[in-house]
Image 1: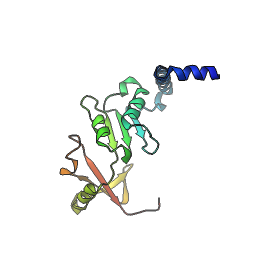
Image 2: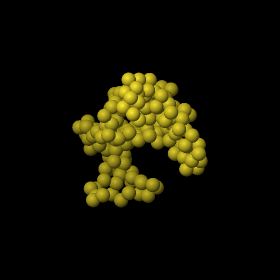
Image 3: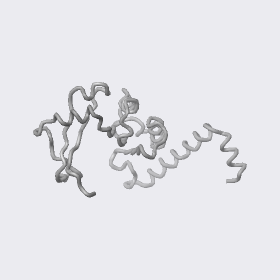
Image 4: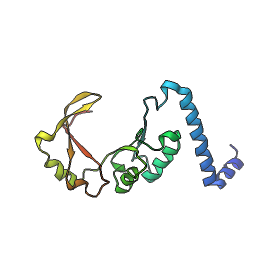
Length: 170
């Protein structure tokens, strides 16, 4: 692209960005169609992973931009799973994900605050279940669901699953 082309694109601002995003979405939709059984949605679900370390923008904006790039049928509904690490564990982002009518599936990491840590310490031994990875029990790892007032300020229906395991060299 020439310097003049860059200048024209830069001067177009949001209008140019919308055109680029629209074109990418159309190309992605066509590529998925051509990929057939190798397309990302072959099993009926699309997974969008947002990595907090790499995201300098707001998680809501980033998720909206990611959703705009996938076929329309996946922009709302349980067949789309948005996953984040603990950087996504904010009230604003989780509330946006859980908004009535959006119905996106989501799995969001949480920072182990002191309040969460205190709840973990109260989990009885009988409540811990062996953790599984790909249907295989992970040696020395257990999971439990935290209940009670630890989720009082979060969207209704949210679940908080915690994991404990022995340190390992991996």
